[in-house]
Image (cartoon, rainbow, N blue to C red; front, side):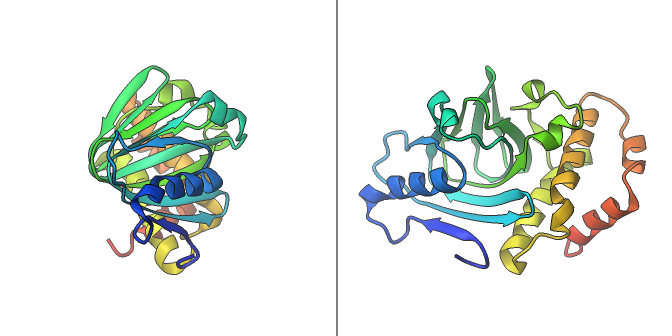
Length: 227
């Protein structure tokens, strides 16, 4: 544990044991996944995972590798999450529902853990991931089948709200042991995703932004006080 985080690192493990250690940790804390290293004999990785209210937040730093969520893995694990991923460094390729998207640093996307998916990281990456209860987005009327594996910009506009909140929430969890206003973090991030979807569809979001309650605006400001 590190600052209330569960941590796995391959730094002090023999090369032949690294991927197994990594896979065991991921299976226990995130869910059953099949992992490989594209045939590379060496794998290096560090994963830091923490809990904030009803969401899990993680940071992944790893050399190139691939993970797959298979029908068999889904049957063994009934946790209904959507994974939001903010690409911080490197390129990540995400495949689900017959779609594929490659994220560059400063972009984000999401995928559904109740259905098979593949994440291929062809180079060293850093990603921040949130496991968000699926019903938080379903309740907003969002079509997850259409929403997953879409590219959203985290550099400007409405999409930046989601990207910045993912990265800042994990940083707060890592350094302070909790994310700001963690009791409402799931609702806040779900609301930001909804706004990003509206923006992507060309629906004016200035009205939507005005409809954010003052409390939610204050939470966003609190997260970004150091920015």
